[in-house]
Length: 111
Image (cartoon, rainbow, N blue to C red; front, side, top):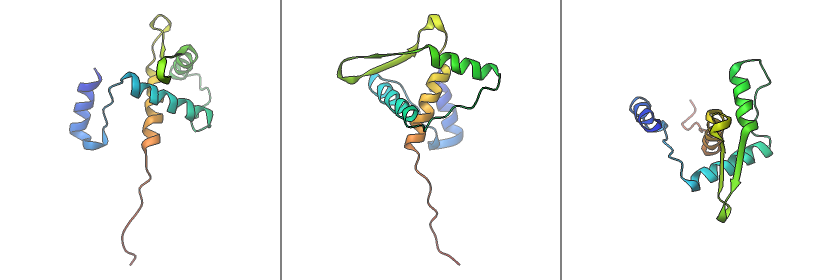
């Protein structure tokens, strides 16, 4: 489902849209980046606001599990029997995007 949506968005927004297909390697790297953002305090979640979205996000984070495989490959998910992992994956992708962000620097001449 994600690839057609990414293609549609890319038509409208151009190269700002980056499509990611998870492989065991890049999902693992994203997972390690996510843990680094958590452990360094770079990732903050808003305080509880009694919304369904907040409750679901917390539920997914609490139900997430991680498995470490050979060669330090990490896999993480929420067991489908315990719910979805949409918010978890969204946070991981947001951390990945933030890590790749480079501030824009104004260039030009002063008048």
